[in-house]
Length: 330
Image 1: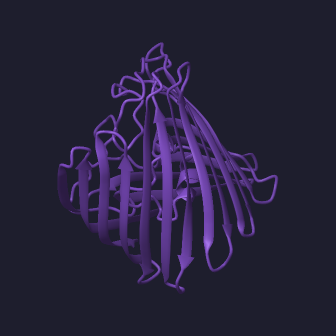
Image 2: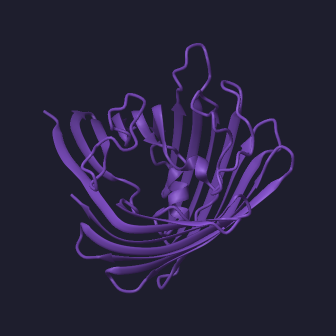
Image 3: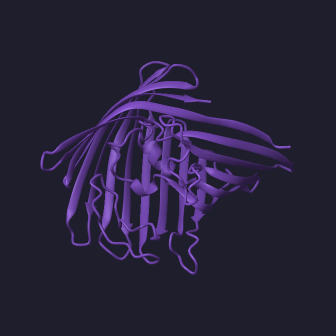
């Protein structure tokens, strides 16, 4: 019988978000909800030793909204509230194969680029195409044949009849050697029936190009380099998404600092900039800066605070956010 573990985390924060248009109109929204982790989460995991160095395992995850008690935030296409990492896996000397819903290969490249752990909705303005999951996917993690090197490949199916709509593929390469960490991710996706908003990546939600179902392809790359000096960990990243066959693209870059104040408290800073260009050559520029502090109250409980601001040359001129929260894992 396989061992089964129940786990998860609850993330809640008092958050104030202020949006200002280019015309000077400001609206402020105050909420209670997840900010550091994006959502609260409940998951079930299990594994079984198959012998001969092989193991079968699974993970079923679902979003939780602790502020309302619901499990339907961020639902999947079946509206069952399970829009988190969920897969069955077989591992052995050949590596690991996962079938189900998994992070996009470039996600952890982007996560490493933000020492605030992608907390809140400001500052990281470049690599939007990498943030999220791939449903209906096969993910392959190669065995380690070079110390410190990890290779992942993923193929996602849109499951559209006689069509490539929604199909995707991607890979990532990560190398860790002492204080040095280098990560690269690439991916492409074909427009699906849910791509009606077009090529949208910016803070202002400006459409950089129209997408045609089953033919328009978005190509993305992201690179991050980090070095831990002990007193401070520094990193720099760049990311680009292009609409194939057009001049529409979105390019971003930035740097981050992670500063341990003591064995329980860490200060993080991230500053980024990006430029979106549509098919006519019109550009929209963005930039963002965010400061965050994380304090571990225990091994499973963390208090945090963040202040961030993103600005753009589009219709929505600025978004500022302040949050103070508590996150507990179990």
